[in-house]
Image (cartoon, rainbow, N blue to C red; front, side, top):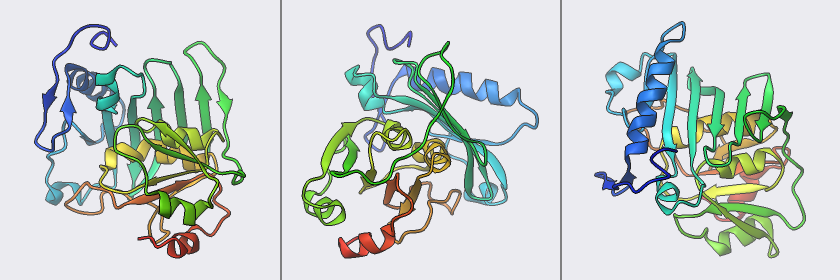
Length: 249
């Protein structure tokens, strides 16, 4: 937030995504904090991601971190960026924390313990739950990565669905607190973009599915790029069938 409040330079990484001093400073703070925990576990993050698969493939438990998710939103100063920290066990996300530094919204979840929301630092924790599919449904969409394919969304949700643009992993949290119904992501994301918020969504009653209907998993191989996915609030619906009927993948 110190960087956010002042003028800052923006670098462009090899994948053409932006990088600021806040990304790097947050990485240092988080890495130092995790190193103080017992046991000390390996850390994979956006700013420290070049760990070879030969080393990662043996990990049963590790931290997966995005020190600043939504750098484009950070650069625009619209507040829609997050800090994501997840614990991965045997390829599944079992604990996740998502913080929105501008608003103070903090989402936290752990396997078997539910999902919780704190609207600011001194507020009470509120247990959150997804909702049954609304009529009309609300689709969370990316703020900076283009509109979703309207034809596909109409086949998936019906003609009258509403679109709610939002940046970063806050889209998952919108579903988790029952304020939206689905988030379809076409195109690449990295594992650290989704893991923390997936845990929050799953513990609130939702799911994050690849386009064949299987739960999104982690540390799958050499690449840290996720498959395309659909995040849903109402997990009682046969989304695999709906995706096939909508022409996905």
